Length: 244
Image (cartoon, rainbow, N blue to C red):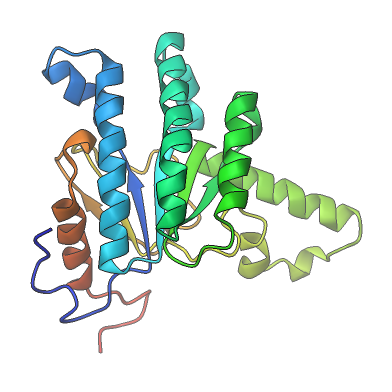
């Protein structure tokens, strides 16, 4: 991997990188291939991104694998995606575990096929003691739904007398989110040239730096992640304050 000179020489890398992996279908279409071919090639890019994150010293990597809106796609494509997810969890878990990667999952996984739910539970349990990269996979995830579920949970706690409404803070709200205990993303990368968040980590990305790449996800390499990290390191993050 040809890491830009700025990495390691200036600011530290982002602690948490979130990626919207977009462009699998367009990659396949451009090559007159079925859409599943793009998803299969995209799975290879996932492996590269995970390896690069480890090499760059990133602590948390969140991948938007399947959104709550993806159920609107044709049934054949959904079945293909679920099959690919099964294969990934079955084939990659051992290597991820050996690499000290801890896997976590966010989103409403209860709506996934039962066997995939078991694979998710197994991956979570198997890697729970690992201390290296935290790999967070968003499955059947939608930012608005996550915020809604958090609000409902706090409303129930208030109704049960466990908390006073006036005591609900940003921190207490964040504790009800799927990402409780995980730092907010510092950097969000979206591939394929699209420039929108698509209902991804809406609460958590309040102060994330955004990088949009024209590269389609199946063509994403370690160098793309390294370059995005270098761009992040060159930005002035003020969080509402003035520059020094």
